[in-house]
Image (cartoon, rainbow, N blue to C red; front, side, top):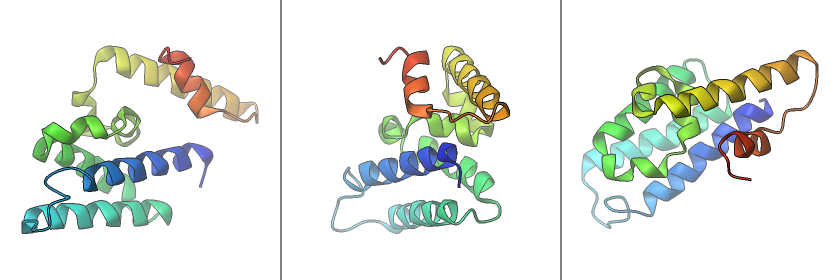
Length: 131
């Protein structure tokens, strides 16, 4: 797994932990749909960890589902995951965000071509003005 993938795995784990600590997921009596959603979330993380075939498509579908089913919790999902999984998720991003993630990808690709390490978190902070 590349460091880029590891960062996104960590973003998934953070989102999962954020979700399970919010309603409706922290309730003692969850409805089946919410139980299924959390189980699917766990499975996505496990499949991402093992680079299972089709995990990117599953991630795209899952993040899209999270935004549709739990819009009040959508802010708990790192914007990076919308970009990483792409597809319909890009509709939940502003043009400015898309441009910044494109710039970040271009910097990452340039570093990889030169065989250089790419510090995703610090470069991301710089592009998004979080220094």
